[in-house]
Length: 237
Ligand code: PEP
Image (cartoon, rainbow, N blue to C red; front, side):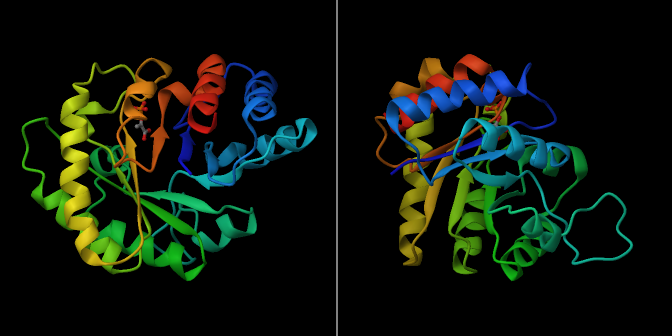
């Protein structure tokens, strides 16, 4: 069973009802899955739920970030308890864009993981090297240390591959996934390893051949009405 996480980032589909209708059509064709999650911007968690329920779309609620604090004077932060109240199940933590643009350190990522876990949310910890030639070791070690702390979902997202339209050398991705697996398997705990970075309908069939990938975190392509349908259909078909 593959996981599919749609991360809309700070964007919305051109038309919410057409987007929901497109994914609903995919579900009618290939079936629903409880490993399918949509992470819209916080502001649209409820709007998406309303439209999905109108059209009968089934999905798990996701959030793109969580506060490192439980509550209090942290303007702009959304604590895990409030995400839980909204029915959120999965939360992205340490996404490359949060690390790069908001200065999130591994320490902050760790605090966010603890907050999510306290509330019973499932953190998806994103890790990955900044440049294509960077040493992978610190990122693998980070993933290993989070799995040791009870994180069950890791997303390997090479930062150089994120952006939606990067032309990927897929053999490199496969090689790196294998390196992550070797170390993560050694921890002896159950975990899921996702891949994210310019996943689109065009390369998905190739990525699906790699047995080391348990699912995909899809950013830019997931906002597109057509691709939201075709990607879902390829994953669950
Ligand atoms: C992401 O947002 O996690 C991501 C991988 O983005 P993109 O698919 O646009 O590269």
